[in-house]
Image 1 (cartoon, rainbow, N blue to C red):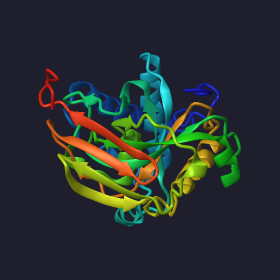
Image 2 (image 1 turned 45 degrees about the horizontal axis):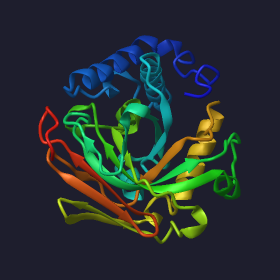
Image 3 (image 1 turned 180 degrees about the vertical axis):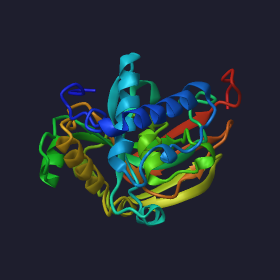
Length: 283
């Protein structure tokens, strides 16, 4: 992560909860490594303590970096008004994207790569310049964005049965799993992302429809929120980062053997298959 060492350290800032934060991170990391979902971690942290939850996320991210992973960008979650109401929140959350969770259009996602997977259709922005300001404008964002791509985010939960609160999903890296990017870049001046329609098909059947306006009113709103939030934390968005701006329609369960394809008006399509068994035979 660029600037990870210089960023504010939420773990160090919560010495009163160092044991609990470490235990929650251990629980989530064990679920990731064993493939066995864990109990919720909210019982380890003060109720509704998002600072503690982000400290857990920061700790697990640091461990993945130490193991040789690389942060390739960030995802914005909880961009749907309906989901915000469900969890009783008024703002999105965020998580890190890693090099080993990125897949290209048409790729096969390995069996078990994501626990309890669910797919979403999203707009991905790839930055060509830094966004270091705590209050970036939409003009700053448009100027900094090199291009947009259609994306499928496959969210997952290390928490058993998706029994999550806001604290659980934040601690669990915003329920991040893997992401699949289209391969045809499109400049923002060729798009109207607010009105762009989107559809997600599973095995050829439409299972989720939506539009850019479902993502905080406009996908650029989600990216601006992320830019300001990360800049305030001392780890701003950088050139080369990929930003997953949030779901354009309802999330969809996926299973081994499924094939999903997302299409976004003006951006084109992106497709992913899910291996049918642990040996990775064709889906």
